[in-house]
Image 1 (tube, rainbow, N blue to C red):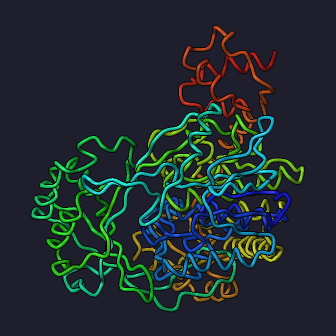
Image 2: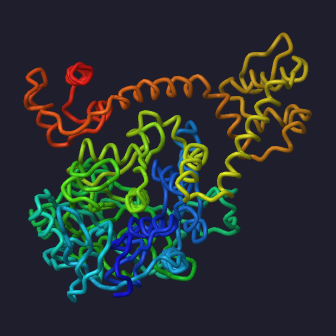
Image 3: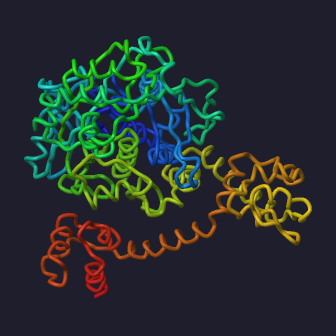
Amino acid sequence: MQQEEYDLIVVGAGHAGCEAAAAAAGLGSRVLLVTMNLNTIAQMSCNPAMGGVAKGQIVREIDALGGQSGRITDATMLQFRMLNRSKGPAMWSPRAQSDRMRFAEEWRLTLESLPLVDFWQEAVTGLLIENAACVGVRTALGVEFRGRTVVLTNGTFLNGLMHIGEKNFGGGRAAERGSQGLTEQLVGLGFEAGRMKTGTPPRVDGRTLDYSKMEVQAGDENPGRFSYLDTPPLTRQRPCYITYTNARVHEILREGFEKSPMFQGRIKGLGPRYCPSVEDKINRFADKDRHQIFVEPEGWHTVECYVNGFSSSLPEDVQYRALREIAGFERAKMFRPGYAIEYDFFPPTQLTNTLETKLVRNLWLAGQINGTTGYEEAACQGLMAGINAHQRVSGRPAFTLRRDEAYIGVLIDDLINKGTDEPYRMFTSRAEHRILLRQDNADSRLTPLGHALGLASDERLARVRQKEQDTAEALEVLSRFGVEPAAINEFLAENNSAEISEKTRALNLLRRPGIELPALAAALPALAEALAGFSPEAQEQAVIQTKYETYLLKEQQQAERMRELENFRIEGRLSYAAMPALSHEAREKLLKIQPETLGQASRISGVSPADVSVLMVYLNR
C-alpha cells in the first residue's frame, strides 16, 4: 500500500517493537510498525517503572548502544533511586518511577519523528512465507505488506486469555482484544509453542488512600539518570509509599480460593516465579503474617495508583474487600481489578543468537513471545532484533554480544541455549561476569560498538572518550598524591583503619575497606583541590577501578579463557547422533540447538565438561 516493500516490518508496538523500529530506522532501514492500537504504543501494561536490579543495567546498556528507553525514561520519570548502594558497585541498579501516560506519549512522538517509520493500525493474522523465508505480513482485513525482514513482538496478545475469578475472556491486555492466527501458522510450519501466564494488580484512586498510615519511600536526594546523554535533570520527585497486608487480608483472600482460576486449574500456563500473585504468596508462605505492598503513583497529573505486590486473579469483590483491610486503604476505591492473563510463547531454543528463527529465514522474535517478562528484557531484545534485521538487509555482519560484554548478551545466551519454561527475568546472579557488567560502565563497554554500527552518535562516543580520559587522569592524581602520617592518622583512627608510619600514596589508602574518596578528600584539602576539576562520574570510576582492581583482573582473565572456546567454530550441522562418546542427553540437546561455537555448546543445559572435551577432540580432527 504505502510502500512497495519495506526493509523491516515490526509487528507489535510494545517496548520490544518500539526499540526494534527505532533502531532499524535510525540505521537507515525503511520500517513499517503494525499495531492493533496506535493509542497504546509503548504502554506500561504493568507497573509504571523502569529499571531495578539487573534491569537497570539493561536499560543503561540499551542507551549506550544508541537505543531510546533510557532517554525516554529520563524525560518522563517521577522518581529515581539507585538500589543496592550499600553493596558493591556490581549490584548498584538504577530504578525510576515513570509517568505512564507521558512515557507512552514520548515513545510515540519519538517514533513519529523518524521519517523512515510508517504506521499501520490493524491486527496481523498471518505471515507471508516463500521458500522458507518470511517476506511480509497479512492483516485481518486481508491487506498484505511486503517486507525483506519481519520482527514479531506480540507480547501477551497471542491467543491471550484473561482471568478474573471464574470469569475468563479473550484479550491481550485490559480492554484490548487478543491476536489469533499467528500461533497456528507458526505451529503449522514446525515451530513449538507453549503457554505462559502473568498478572497485574488492581489500580486504585489515590484520593481515597490515607498515606499517613503508610511509610514514605522517597527518591534519592541527588537523583541520577539512565541516559549517558545530557537529559534534563529531575528537579522534583513524587514519593511512593509502603504498607502491608495482615491476617484479615489473608483470611478474605483465602475465602476466594475456591473461585481462583490458578488454584482450580483453569490456568495452565506457568507464571513468573519471582513476581507471584498475592494469593500465591499467602498460600506458599503461610507462615508469614504480612507481605509488603508498594503504592506507586501512575503519573504527575493522575490520581491512579498501582498496588505493587497485590497482583491477583481472584474475583473482583474478593480483591476489593481484601484491599480495604490494608492500612491506608480503608476507604479505597478501585479503578479496575487485577487479572491474570495466559498467552502463547515460542521456546527461544528455536532461535539463533541474533533472535532470528532457525526454521524461517528473515523472521525474528523479540520480547515476551520468547518467554521473558519485563519491559527491560523486551526492549533489549527488540533493539538487537531491529539491529540484526537492518544488518541482514544491508548485507552487513550480524551483531551479537557476548556474556562478558553485556547483560543483554547473558539474556540472549540464556534464552537460546537453556530455554525457559517460566517467564524469564534477569538477575545480577545470572551473570558470571557481573563485576565487569556494571551499570556505571555500560557506555565504555558498548558505545564504541553502537557507534561502529552507526546507531550511537559521535556525541555519545566523544563523551565516553572524555570520561575515560578524565578517569585515567584522576587515577594519576591519586597515584602521585603523597600523604604524610601526621596529616591522615587521626582520620584513619576515626575510621577504624590502621595508622601509617611513613608517607604513602592516596591510592593506597583508597584501596582500604571503609575508606571512601569523599571522606578522604575532606580530610585532605589539598587532595580535594587536586581532584576539583574532575566530574563526580570520573572520580567514581577511579574509585571502582582502584578498589576492585584484583577482582576486575580475575574476571577479565576468566572471560578471555571462555573466549578461547568461542573461537572453536562449529560449521554446518554435525552428526551428533553418530558420536557415541557423547552422553545421550548431550546428543539430544546438541541436535536440537545446533550451537555455532564450542563455547555456546558448553553452556547448553545437559552438556557436561566431558561432552565438551569430546567435541573439542572432534573439531580438532
